Length: 358
Ligand SMILES: Nc1ncnc2c1ncn2[C@@H]1O[C@H](COP(=O)(O)OP(=O)(O)O)[C@@H](O)[C@H]1O
Ligand SMILES: [Mg+2]
Image 1: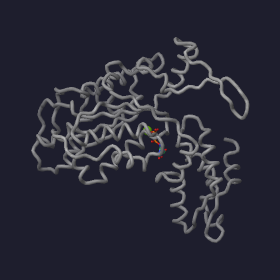
Image 2: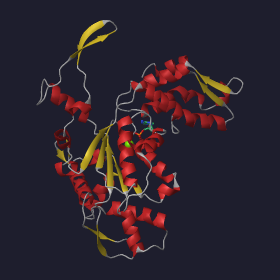
Image 3: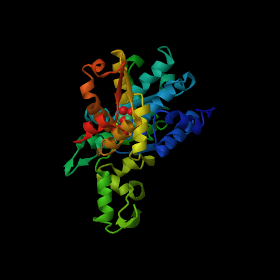
Image 4: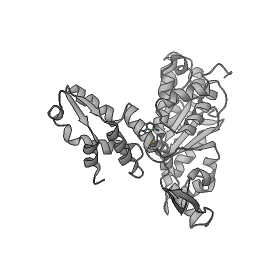
């Protein structure tokens, strides 16, 4: 594909940032990759690592809707998103890579219509963007147990990544028949939470093989001086840690960039709670509206909800929903009963009561 005018990385990152709060470096990396991809240039594959609920799937969805929202771009990009486990299942059935190629071809058919020549579908599909979500689920071992399906799934991806000759059975709607396709133009963006990786790396640099590597630093907090271990995964993560986690060296070597998503701050959680279209606040507000009742919430209450959510380990922004559910639980049966002049106001005391035993 010849390079053509594509949206700049800045334009793209601004668009993505409307849906993804924070996560600056992941958004930037994605925007640069997408800009190059849309210009028809080759782009290295990306691996995103971030705790659950930090926005990995949200970022993938943001890219999908960014592309879908502009007819010019929609027609130039074939994008699919799939769960890594699908790869394990098809690999077990002896058809590695097939699900990815079939879905890409289906997307190409949606874009080109049903009457295009086979070569056009193939050309379009082979320059697609493939999101593989929950890629940590295809680790090759869990504890001491070998995960055969995971190993196969990694191999299935390997058959597609940077491979110029992938044997493939055309789907029936294309007339069937065995062909060889060049999948080296695909861009893969894989993401996973890699739960346990953080602790494993922390252990390595404190009590494990690299004991003593992480030294305490002196911090001053509230006028008091103390020694503290300050650990950022991004400072210490090495490829070996991912091998140990169960991603094969061959698999990892196909990624040019490993991008870490950060745990969300209280302030970011507040913004997600207030602005995200699928936040519990918006959903409850829509429900109350449907009952003819307005929902108002005080800034103090919002802060308290974000703070309570930030205390929930390993849930990320998902904790906002859990916390908010507790707050509105008793209001939902009869919102009109709790309303004064048609408005339900949620204030700090209600939140404090709801999160007291969290
Ligand atoms: N950085 C973020 N910006 C906006 N919303 C977010 C962010 N992180 C998480 N969320 C919200 O939290 C929920 C879970 O996020 P998701 O992206 O699915 O997490 P994961 O990183 O586990 O894939 C979604 O409802 C999403 O709206
Ligand atoms: Mg996810």
